[in-house]
Length: 257
Ligand code: PGA
Image (cartoon, protein in one colour):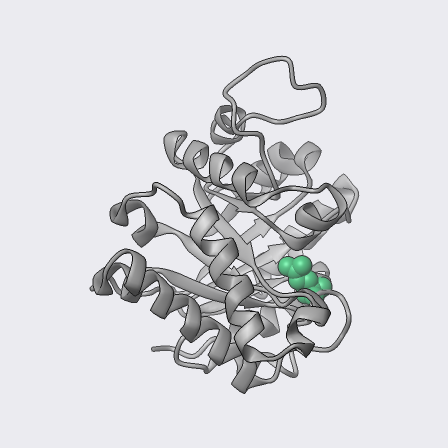
């Protein structure tokens, strides 16, 4: 079984100018949490990747892209290819975020193509899955059906050794940007269900190696209880990651396992 290193990711979405991004990196580096086993990464918007990469040089903070196309090149106006991201020093790529699924109609079939392409170009996907409020209100069984539907298509035709290195973010859509986070019991139930599904489709070793993050209104005050959950290996943080002090506090809340 691989040791699951805890992982916190700042998803800046469409926020921050170049100057703001650089001042964040400067401040955050000074507040960087101690445990070296903790992996930390930042996802700026595309035009800032290169300057943030330079600012991160020599630190242990990794670079994440918020999306990508699945093709290496081609007539896809406005899209960004995986090999360009790799060239810029990107390690991880967020795929299937609910804002991509919702606003830009990304389907599980497309997300699956992107996941295969990420592996092909040596990028590690951070796959986001999660139920909407309406689905959640229909009960835990419906939530599980949604997670199963998303995951089974998103991970189609992957080999266990790829899934081992994958990061999955359980992000209930109703908790994203709303200030209402999932209760520890619901977050743990979602993550545990995802891990059980991976065990069923792949194998136990893969299920115990894959890292599962929680995302959705993670803040310094709720991070300790959410990050202490046995099946949760870290957090994907939106709003609170825009402030270097708040993001450092969240990272500090990750227990040393
Ligand atoms: P939030 O966003 O922390 O602002 O809820 C999380 C995400 O979208 O990944």
